[in-house]
Length: 246
Image 1 (cartoon, rainbow, N blue to C red):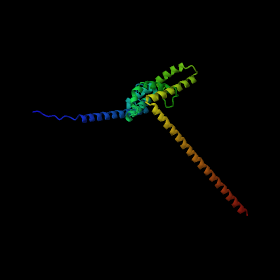
Image 2 (cartoon, one colour):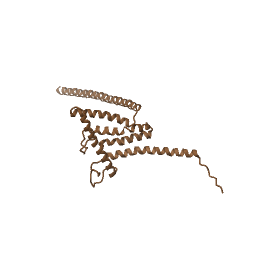
Image 3 (cartoon, rainbow, N blue to C red):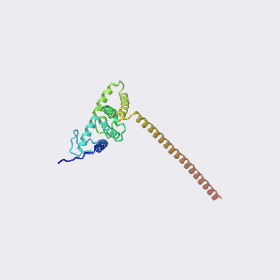
Image 4 (cartoon, rainbow, N blue to C red):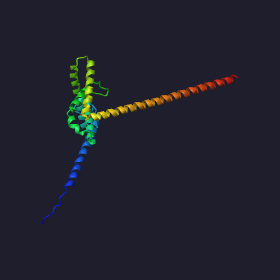
């Protein structure tokens, strides 16, 4: 007995497969953004007293990701300090680019500069004075940032203060340039950002001037009214005294 099999519609299968691939790509892109937020939460909740390979303690971890997050954040802070924040920043920006389809095709060409960006940021942070909340013996750029800064300082032939200023300025410029490049910004995007930033500054300045002008005008009117009231009171007091004298 022969059975006739119904042929499957290849067009429907193609559409279904494409829809699945599309939704899968969207989920991966959203997952990158979610990972960046989790990464930032891990670094934000970092505590040097959490149990890790460098801190032996039986106290529970304060990190939002528990002992796992405490161990990772401890290693990152020790190695590159606050430059660890570059990781969630890169993940968030590129994840957002993938979701919005804005320059996501530049990832391959820009990713090769990410190690340079991390190194420059670590050394740049090491040129800054540590704040009171910093509870480590090394600088803000971690051990690697301090080591690289020591080498750079020996290469600049000036006194210590001037050397630190020069190195910090150069590294600051490199930090901005490499950061914008690794985050995928193009000349067109930077032009738009600069234009809208300038417009925002002008509008903010105009608003401040208008508010100050209104306050000054209101203050002047108030001062005039107060002076008139005082003069009227003085005249009334003088008239009362004159009447009592009579």
